[in-house]
Amino acid sequence: MKKTLIALECFLLFVLCYYSLYMSTDYLTPHGRFEMPIFVRLLDMIDLFIHEGGHGVFRIFGQFIYFLGGSLMQFLLPAATILVLLRTHGLRSLMITPYWLGHNMMNVSVYIDDAPKTQLTLISRHALHDWRWLCTRMGNIDSAGDIASVVVVFGVLCFLTAIGMTIYFIIHDVRELFWPAPPPRPMPPGLHARTKTFLPPEGQPPSENDHDSLL
Image 1 (cartoon, rainbow, N blue to C red):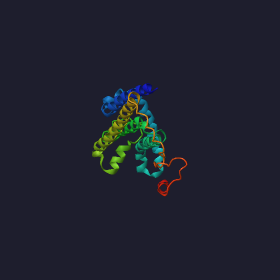
Image 2 (image 1 turned 120 degrees about the vertical axis):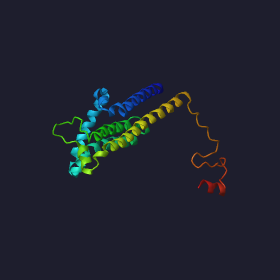
Image 3 (image 1 turned 60 degrees about the horizontal axis):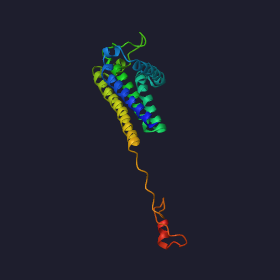
Image 4 (image 1 turned 180 degrees about the vertical axis):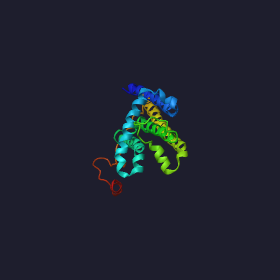
């Protein structure tokens, strides 16, 4: 069972490295996105529904938050997933969940970088470009590329977190398989497990000092 788990973790490590490298390089260029791997395309479709759902959720907070809400939801939902799975499934969930957040960050960075160019195909001919509207409103349309670069850096950090946690658990499981920890040494006779104080022999009443130590 442990060998199968290690094999699956090694496969996961390969997949994470492959897609993290693609998302950090080719995905950021129009030519690289022309022939996306099917997994990336599928995840982008899921993220698109999350993006559009974010507009609906944040509509009530005004026009600015409405335009920001799509990208904001792409950050909030994966981040919430990380926290929930970390609480329910422990550290092993960090082998996967940070990648999804990093994927969304790379997706949003492409959208931000496109604000001055408007070369991306939107879901509708009449749809407004969220980040062009946001950057124009904030007066930093020329800084869109710099904002996108910052988001890319955080995306890469998410990828590295997922890869690092996977490597950690591979090493942990290999050590448990081939170099298991020695069993704990038995406690000396008369040593209490909780208080770590020596008890008097049977039939002998405890002295005042022993009574104080037991308290």
